[in-house]
Length: 309
Ligand code: NAD
Image (cartoon, rainbow, N blue to C red; front, side, top):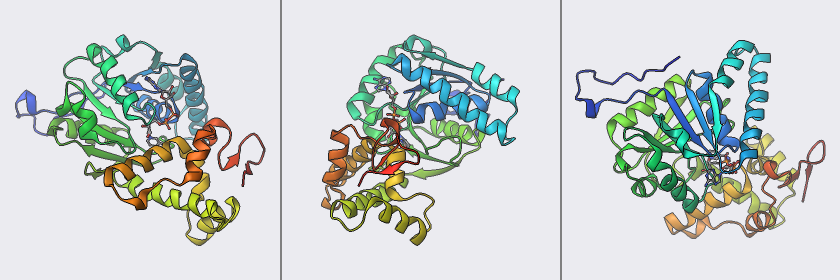
């Protein structure tokens, strides 16, 4: 099934019309890339998922199958929907697979040099009309767009984790992003059943500007001995009615991603209140990245996960 994104004004010149999005490329088969591929495939889009690591692609297909099973068990989709959605996804380690993409969403590791290298490798394979989006949690869309051959077709589409469950997409226009590109992402979000919040292009946008300093403060509370991992998480769950404690949430997001976001805030806003907690830095240096590496503020090799401090 092809998904047609209708132009906002069908009498407008072709250059002002929102393009049709039928095939989506996704770069990075980590927790976000597999979630984005999942929701696009369920919505009927053809998906090409790329990673540098072939084993990441295998893990992503397995994760999507498992997550779709959950949706089948809850009666949200049928077993047939699941099979059809998985059949719409192909995986590759070669950017030549992006030749037919109308939109590519980059969800590679949260490092600017990695993202720039991804765009450089990808661009020769894209058709000129292809929209290029980043799922970055914090990096300037204007700056990332300026590093490509198509800043007017470059936009931030920031999905939330876990993508199949969370209703929000933050949409961030760079200074050069054109209106048809913006309209195409709005229509895509509606097709995926998501609500959008539009953010200006400032470090970490809206959600992470507020959320990640709160997580960083929780790590400071742990670092300074204000409370244990369990005390801090229990305090915020029962005292502030948060569904997850901040340290549990940090493990879920990935401590490397949390640290990168704090660094972007610290450098981008030149304000010492955003300095990353040294304990967060130490965990990342140790390779304790949270759930994805099996250990963060909790040890996930134990059942139930055991707090590490
Ligand atoms: P992740 O570590 O789970 O996955 C990153 C993937 O990118 C890995 O599979 C890695 O192999 C791949 N990758 C690295 N370099 C690459 C390259 N040069 N080419 C192709 N693939 C490459 O990370 P994630 O949590 O999925 O985050 C990905 C992006 O999504 C980041 O920009 C992050 O800020 C953003 N994001 C994360 C969350 C979250 O809660 N984790 C939420 C919203 C947005």
